[in-house]
Amino acid sequence: MRTNDSLRRATAGDRRKPESQGYALGDASGTPIGEAGVTAADMGKTTFAHRTAVIGWSLLIAGCGAGAGSTLIPAAPPPPLVSVAVPPPAPPRPKSAPRALQARVSQLIRSFPGKAGAAIQAVDEDWIVSEGGTLSLPQQSVSKLWVAMTVLAQRDAGRLKLDDPVLVTRDDLTLFHQPIASLVTVQGYQTTVGALLTRALTQSDNTANDRLLNVVGGPSAVRRFLAEKRLNGIRFGPGERLLQSGTAGVTWNQSMAMGRGFEAARARLDPALRRAALQRYIDNPPDGAQPAGIVEALARLARGELLSETSTRVLLETMAASHTGRARLKAATPAGWTLAHKTGTGQELGSRNAGFNDIGLLTAPDGRRYAIAVQIGDTTAPMRVRQVLIQQVAAALTGAQPRGSGAEETE
Image (cartoon, rainbow, N blue to C red; front, side, top):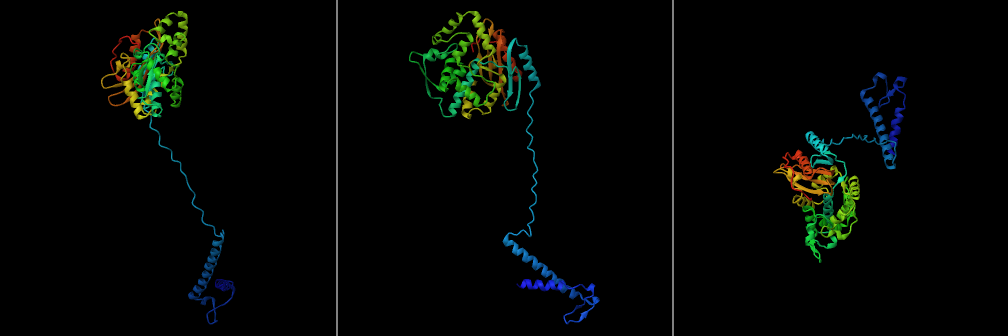
């Protein structure tokens, strides 16, 4: 190769002994030149030849190695990757609960003559105040809310429609407060899912509620809904007939649903048996719920986390049309505020009551929303005192002047 010949000639010249060892260099004519006679031009020629040879060698080696994957001349390593952890932005600090509100709610519940609990949660501000908020207290008809939610969840899933027809027969009748019973003939009463929902929430009709309970699949369906939505601290009982007969110590018979058959059967019981049954219910209510759990569920409902937008609106508008509990939360809802709520009232034995409640969503004139639950699980205080407690807890939030006692309430 020409390149090799050039390299041999260049390196041969480089192997001559340097001038410092006495060898003479000649010019192009062969005439010796002394050390001091070497010209700059001659030095330039020698240096150029040497550089050319080195560059040629390097190119040859690089060219041969490139095709064979040689590592004689390794590529420069890539610069190291430096990863700097960037901390996520700090979450916004939740607003603290108003101290005065907490103090007032605590004072009201602690001074009440009986077992009670209350909680208020700001729907959009992430704070809660409570006293007795983790007590499991009888819900009574407050539990109709979970039946209604289960109905609407099944509507959202396409399993039923609010205008689906439903026949109510005498076998569906329950006890206590059931206005629909007067409409049920021997042939039954034809209605719809939506109409039953309205009756259950606005009139607290026990038969309307239990008929809906049957439509959705029974108590297990409601409990499944509560579990799937992670609504903690809330239990659901066996339905009105079994819940109320168990609380009274009576074995249920469907004939008791006609007229005042249940009340008559209950009155025939030994008072000691009734007291024992009531105590069992108070100690471990199968429909027990914590006030803190209820307000959390209401807050999630209001935020649209439990049902579709349409179903949420239907439920809250129906609750806002409730006719029950005029001397409870309603009595402490001032002008400009709105209330969507559900009451609950348990049985009494002598002067003792097991369950007197009101829960709901209060909306202020500026749009701020609050979930509230006031539950009385066991007391001998008269109804007017129970009503005033519920009013005063709400008034601590709304600033309303409680109206005092109202008419006697069955719901």
